[in-house]
Amino acid sequence: MYVISGSTHQRLGASLAEEMDTEFCGVVNRHFPDGERYIRILMDVDGQDVVIVQNTFPDKKIVELLLILQAVKEAGAKTITCVIPYMGYSRQERIFQSGEARSAKAIAGVLGSMCDRIFTINVHTPAVLDFFGCEAKDINGSREVVRYLKGFKPDMVVAPDEGSKDRCTLAASMLKVPVHVMKKVRIDGRTVETSSGPVDVKGCTAVILDDIISTGGTIATAANILRDGGADRILAACTHGLFIEDAANRLRVCDDILSSDTLEGVYTRFSVAPAIADAL
Ligand code: R5P
Image (cartoon, rainbow, N blue to C red; front, side):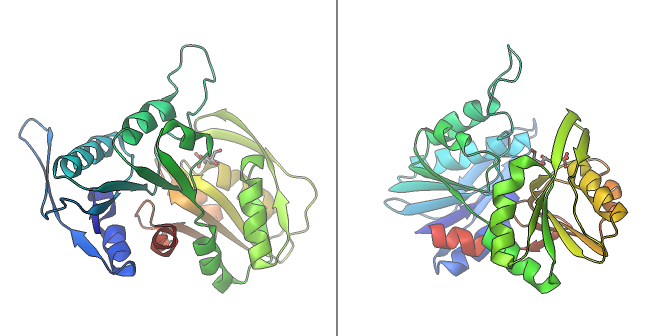
């Protein structure tokens, strides 16, 4: 077996290969002068099981993934497994207004046609898995988040919206603390309004847990409610930390921000490699 990573996951791919005691295959990954991508894999994968690790975010990384898949296919790999730690476009799995593209289906359909199986991690909605058209499974990265959060001894897990209720309830039960679910209404891509039923957070360490932090609006509005309620320490935790635009500034209301390495960045504190290795 070989593990190959695109540029989004050199570190995660290497840790995965180590966890699985297998070879990490290098890739020549560069651009032509006109900006088009060039990919060449550096090991002979003929007849081998190959695992490719790469995100579909931002857009240019999708092209890179397609070229790696094609290279591995042409080199005669026996099976191709694609691990997509952060599945970009998974938030448009439905038609919200007539005329829209069902983006998740467009991206997943192409990738699935080139793989034997695909793994995502805490994908935004499981509906996306059906669009791949090949064997597809979502890996629950909650165990890794919870393991890391234990060190903070939280008193409560807060779900910032109803969409994150199940994930937060599971995390809360693993941490053996109560869960509180807030209600969120999205006004636009950058603005949300959040309301909370009665909750006693005075003097508490509360963890707000979401699958994605993008502009930080969801977490910031929830954190402000907790701060007004007298929370002592507020932690923002997520699997996928996009942190776009002025997210860091909006999140200053939080005492700490923690995310996994599905998107590597300044707030990456823990790795999902063990969960991927188990699933594989
Ligand atoms: C949406 O429902 C997701 O679970 C996240 O809550 C959302 O993507 C977070 O976005 P933002 O950080 O921009 O509020």
